[in-house]
Length: 223
Image (cartoon, rainbow, N blue to C red; front, side, top):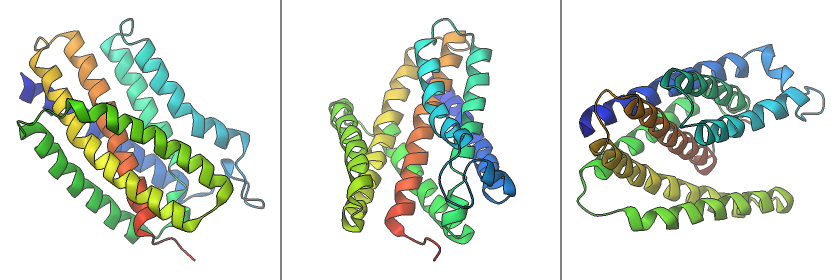
């Protein structure tokens, strides 16, 4: 059961990544981008702020309405979430060369794959690392906000390096956690489908954050 469950999780996650990549490329390489950002000032428009904040709203809705939503409704929200996330990530095509984006995506995929295998196969209980990693995520968020005002390139480099390490660890932790969930749910049930979607959301966020921190860490921005 765990193998089938995890196969569904990774299938949903792969689908979401492809949707996000498509929307990111579509908006980032066309004039649609300027509906999000003012081309003269470089500041975000009202629509840009909505798109930036909307993914958080989707995550909260999916979590708080999990028990009442049907699996099809949850999947619809998940697909919409992936699309909005893609639009919010479209800026990377304005900041980095597409070849560098592709290379970083490949590195992210390789790192993710290795850590997912480790998380799935290891006999070591990673539960104790979960709370530590989540606290580290909160610390990274606070540090990033502070650096928005400080503007230190060295501090940004350190934050990026720590972000890569934290989300690399989270991939293994979340994979093991989801494997255990898969061992305890009934095959083919609506609950199993809903849990697979939520599991895919967790791993999707791990992948995207690892990718973004690697972009920042490795550099490659356009002049």
